[in-house]
Length: 174
Image (tube, rainbow, N blue to C red; front, side):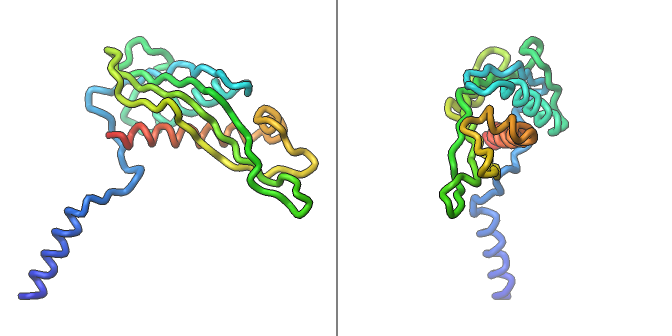
């Protein structure tokens, strides 16, 4: 009998602890079925990030399976607006000669997710996504555009990382 009481008490305590797994939110408010994801604005000095990131975010939303994604705001229940404000490199790894061997790339953006009436659903004026890349000492890029020219997969990888982080952040708000 005491064992049953202890088991029930433990089950109740575990059920009411308030913990949840991060990244498990997968639905938006039920009235949102069509999401407009127009082309991002690029205010960085790195070309192509707006196009690549827009496509990656549209693909990431589509992968959720429950939403129709439009490339324009017209006809959408909610619209995602993104302004890429910067793409920055930061050395994070060095060899014995103090040469850069690993770079961190940080993408900064201002993000707004509004309903069709213009009401703010979610916003982050200083959203950031980060990724790291190995670099050769002979070709250490000094800016993100140079990194993307020397490593053709870097921009694709960064856009996928950015889109996953952004869409997850939006879904976790609900």
